Image (cartoon, rainbow, N blue to C red; front, side, top):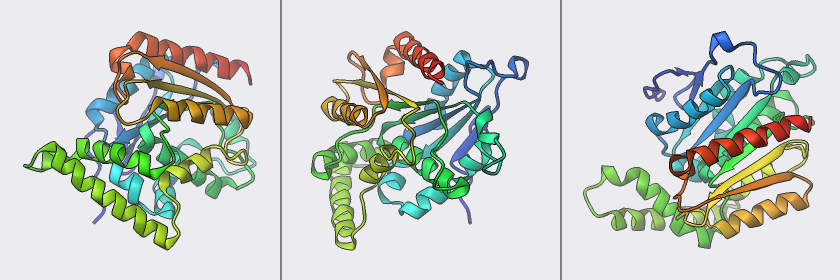
Length: 292
């Protein structure tokens, strides 16, 4: 029996993980300098209640844009096979780009992608792969701006295992009667076991896979722009790792902007600094559009 969508007020479920909110009809058609679609790939174990705050912020910025939200579990990001990840994102691609390749339908879309934490980035990469599966490997994923919120972290598993374990414990601690540290420890052991089993089978870790997809010019064109949102206080993503990633993509020819927030926790920058957060996204979108 297929999983049932969770209640998400204001959104129509496409699958049990993908939800659609249409733009304000009175604001249509979308002005030429605004996105037609905003794709939010939520952080691991993010709930509709919390992710909806980001949807509301985007709706206020761009009222005519439709908003698609992907909800994912951290466990799915770390353990779901690559092909399953890609297939799970096919409905996203078919909703945004239903027109067959060659009919010019992609040119009508102005897409803003917002990936939150490593889980969000992994499934944003899966959307990119799903797009090419559907429309052709020779066609890079069409979008104007990729917002990377509290992602990516280090690609070295040993340095990330503790942070991943903490992220998974945060999302599951309420289901267990013992102290948080015990839950984190169990997830730490589980992650190492899964990682070593994957090494023995020759599997590529999902974080490395996502980074490879997102830095492949045949999949992500250098004509798109990137915005990194981060802080030094992030307990899961090391700011040095994120800045290193930004420097790397710049060396590849991508345009990348960075915005640091003071004192905010992992995917907590909007809650602590809403004006700075939305102003930066708005101004970077304008730069991305101006470059087209």
